Length: 237
Image (cartoon, rainbow, N blue to C red; front, side, top):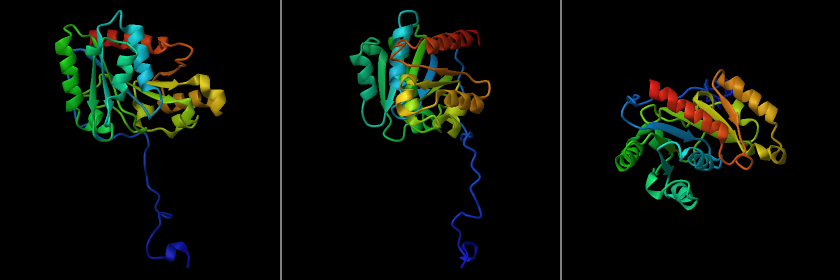
């Protein structure tokens, strides 16, 4: 009997029509940014370098910008503890959120815990200009609600393979900035950087892509420059 005569299908004749660049509806609306700190979301897969990038931005910007950080972990405060141990900011400028579920639930579906953490930081530090909200590690569909983040960075790394950008997903295709991290490891893991960067630009159109190695440039100068520009744009909005 041929597969099409089984009377029940295995998907051979009806492939799923899935658009990997599409995100579900954002359940929250963007809030006016006058009178509050600019909120920058940093997301990406597990191990891509989100916390290291957050630490680098704190080192690069902490002396010139009044900033604070909110970290997200499912069950622990691991990322916040890392930032505190490394002394990138005063400890009272770091808040930890334990999501208790997949990270995207707290950065997109129910953003209350993160907004509360941002509010606590703003109350403790009058004149706060920037809060970096670092997501827990998630997949390529994990993007921030516009009700939480004014701009968002998505971090991938070469250890995931040069195929990652062309896999798409809202994180890769719609984030305001895509960072390809750990480029110093490309040769060791067999990643073709030319292919990876080309695919990233093809998937993102005019949206910017930055490659970085925090081993070579610990203060993430290109990403820091982009963040400064976002603050200028946000201040003039």
